[in-house]
Image (cartoon, rainbow, N blue to C red; front, top):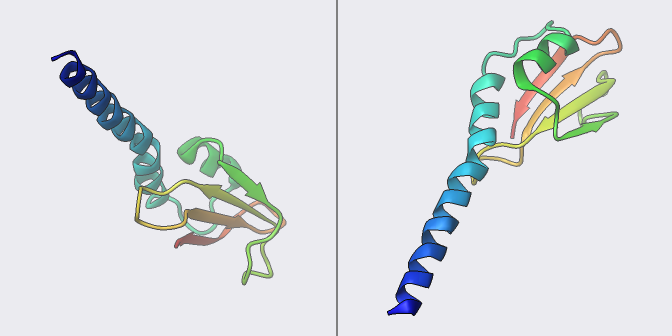
Length: 96
């Protein structure tokens, strides 16, 4: 009987963790739909929050100076990429 309770608790904790872990990526996807070309990096940070990763270049976008990467929802894509030019304006939005 104790084993059943332990298994039940572990399943509930696992499901709870999975739901919590998916909250931020879902919010990222919803907010990324509001990002527009020409927005400044400051506006993007206000909307999206701090990126999970920053890189210098986004492969295939030679004009990009900086790219922010955000987590995407489970099984939807590799991530959300927002690239900026040297003036700090959005030039590319990708949800791959």
